[in-house]
Amino acid sequence: MECIEVEGGASLRGTVQLSGSKNASLPMLCAALLAQGDHVFRSVPRLRDIASTLKLLRHLGCRSEVVQSTQSDVINLSVGDVLGAEAPYELVCEMRASVLVLGPLLARLGRAKVSLPGGCAIGTRPIDQHLKGLEALGARVQLHHGYVDCEAPGGRLRGGDVCFDMVTVTGTENLLAAATLAEGRTRLLNAAREPEVVALATMLKAMGARISGEGTSEIVIEGVEALQAASYEVPPDRIEAGTYMVAAALTGGDLTLEDAPLAQLEALTSALRKAGAAVEALGPSRCRVTRSGPLRPVSLTTAPYPEFATDMQAQWMVLMTQARGESTISERIFENRFMHVPELGRLGAQLSVDGDTATVTGPTPLEGAVVTATDLRASACLVLAGLVAHGVTRIRRVYHLDRGYDDLVGKLNGVGARLRRVRE
Ligand code: EPZ
Image 1 (spheres, rainbow, N blue to C red):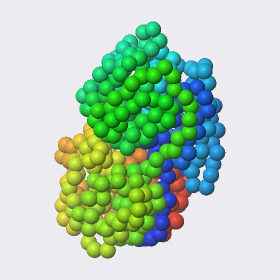
Image 2 (tube, protein in one colour):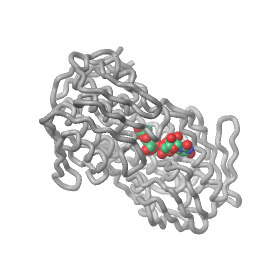
Image 3 (tube, helix red, strand yellow):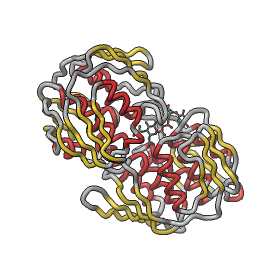
Image 4 (cartoon, rainbow, N blue to C red):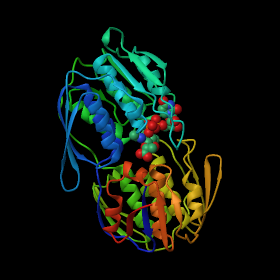
């Protein structure tokens, strides 16, 4: 099994080129199923989750070609007129986001059979809202033998109102995609406002979809008969950007980030400035993060966009272990997203958890140790902790990291960190 060893003590200095967004790429690739033809995706990040998605799309009858360029990949995806309608368990359980083929397949073929994704480390993560939404568009949904079996009577969904009980990002994305080919008007109410939803809507409009309101909590879609393949640009990854911003503040460094979507990071930027870091905008997608003085404790609560992102919670916790005083971090999106707490405790962090709130007492000197990654963002937080721990930190199960960070080791070593991959 592969591990990453981090030698602590470096302060990061230099420039990091960020990659395309994982959480925008995945729904965009799946939405290509809506239209026969040759789709082109630019600025696609080099991630395990992208490879898993392409494997599933090929299983469904698509052909994919990855053209590697210096910083990112171009993916040519050919979607045929004959599509399989079943996403099997062995592919879906590799990656929960595979559920994002459900809406496009059902809209395109009038039927879809997708394995239930199953839970994951951070929570049960049901898809009841996805299914409730598809039923509101006329789908007949059956659950049996671990699969969701959907059918659109007469082969076509019909427009309607979908009101989500809670904000769900992939739920909004599945319904947004499905509604583009439904007959009539669909309104998505209490829709997710995340930039990744906007990126998907931008792609769908390039394919000929009629969408308004994306980025707000009410999205309106006028269904059309058919969509056409086109070319798309994957936007930068705001969570990758946020992770490096925290790394600069944590190590007292000086990082310039290229392609950082600063306008999407206002909650993080505000918290970093309160904590004593300087975040300087050098343009709409370029920023510089430095920290010279002591870190101050800043308490926060995760919430749907544009509030503080749950995907940045673990990284923020590491930063707060070095702040002078006590802070609290409340995780209100997922019910079990504190698995990194005991691992940080092994490094010497002073943390306690009471329900959905973790209390951090700092500053505490961290000591290198062997730790185990449990999920994608927890593994990123352990790498960050290793950067400021005394000695060497060995992080196990780093396949989690490779799912969502494009060349994290290379990018960090490029600005002065000392990381290496080793086999256990
Ligand atoms: C997306 O997951 C992201 N993944 C997650 O990023 C991110 O943490 C999450 O949104 C929240 O921002 C992708 O976009 C591929 P949700 P998603 O549906 O869509 C509950 C990462 O690290 N819920 O917005 O699965 C759910 O259990 C990953 O990059 C239901 O109860 O999250 C959760 O508590 C991790 N029923 C809350 O809603 C449903 O039908 C928000 O989940 C759907 C969701």
